[in-house]
Amino acid sequence: MDELTAAGIMDADLRASYLECKRLNSLHGKTYYLATLLLPPAKRPFVHALYGFARYADEIVDDLASILTEEEKANSLKEWGDGVLADIRSGKSKDHVGSALVDTVKRFNIPIAHIEAFLNSMKMDLTITEYHSYEDLCEYVYGSAAVIGLQMVAVLGTNSDTDIKEANIAAEKLGIAFQLANFIRDVGEDLDRGRIYLPITELQAHGVTREMLENRIVTPQIKSALKEQIRRVRVLKEESATGIKLLSADSRSCIEAASELYCGIVDEVEKIDYEIFTKRAKTSTLRRVKVALPAYLRARKSR
Image 1 (cartoon, rainbow, N blue to C red):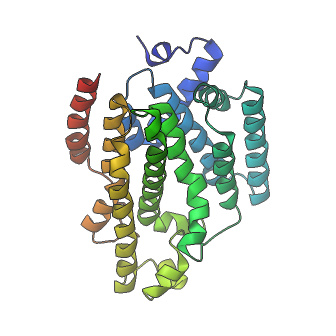
Image 2 (spheres, rainbow, N blue to C red):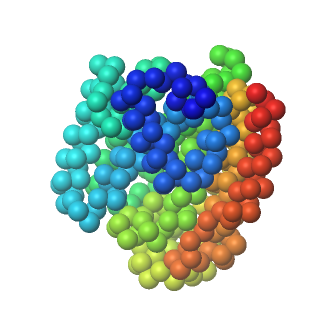
């Protein structure tokens, strides 16, 4: 039985939307996609829907930069985002990506506030180029990452209703850890877009200026600043571990693998001696196999 049928998704147009979300996940989120394969087939389409929505919004903000002006991007994001929110309120959509999201939100009673927070963070990307403090950055990462974790909890399920609150706290932390790992790896790419996501005050505490980053040479100061950010990722990962154990047994292995692989990006940054401007830190195929295979066996056993 295919995933969509297992999930009870039979309408042809809706199936097409879920398949488009799956395509976006497999194309742009290889680590997420690998982890998703550890889920029961009936849960996978809904995770694809959440990722597909996030990826499509990100595409409007970043990947269309060479085609659209800033004003055009803002208008496109607002028009599409407002349309999806209106569809969520009405409970139906004809959008090629949004219809899968609307169906997922309705099935799992996901608060529309989570979608609004995500769209707000995407809007922030159009006007804000740096964040003064970590507290300032937290407003952005709540919408860009933490709410994704909260949405996932609704789909993945928990051992009991009493576990939801603690699982949500862990999901927020893990989502933020994923996002921060991205920021550490992608400093150079973000500079190309005119942005710095590492908190300015924390960079300054290590003697790092924007000009130093734009020189794209890893200095002792930059290395020291990156080490601080890596420590934060590892703390958040560790703090989320107990919450992951509260997820339903058939979902747990997926998130454990995602945590290990995605937070593992910072391990790869260390392996390239922090040379983030000239090399791309990425998880090796061997490490993916070493993490995914035991997780797959655990997932099979849980079913």
